[in-house]
Image 1 (cartoon, rainbow, N blue to C red):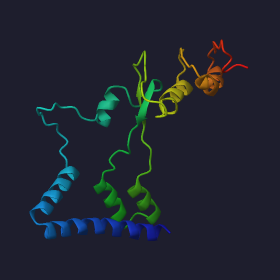
Image 2: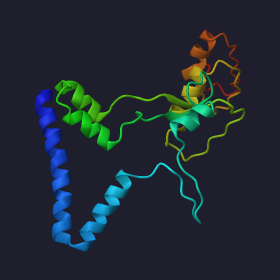
Image 3: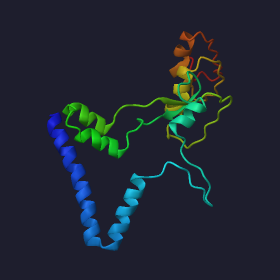
Length: 187
């Protein structure tokens, strides 16, 4: 099964390279420009270039670690770090490595490994604004309430957060006080 998957992935990568070369030959100079842009993205410089548009960029793993955002045991969960060192060339190298078993080569090419949690450990007050139904609760508030062992004041008009996290916070040793004048949560 994995042998077939590996052969198919190698074929897909070869087809991608072949199609780009054909695009360059048939398309003339626009094709070469497209290939140049693709190679430029693939071999992007690590250094930062100053420009009139500013120097904003994504933080590197080192910068996140220096800021205390990786390996933190508490704080607002912002997301998960991607698998380190898993650019397309290292993935292809793993796929073409004959010493690796087929299953491991396919798994390294697909790179399903999850990275470390990125947290904001110094956040004191947090407010999250977004339209209804975009996942503020399930992606930000509930994970924070389930993992934070510090005291929290939560304003929850519908009572969903209290019903989902109260028992877990009670097990952490927190005292839970629910003010429910209209009996939304408490019956």
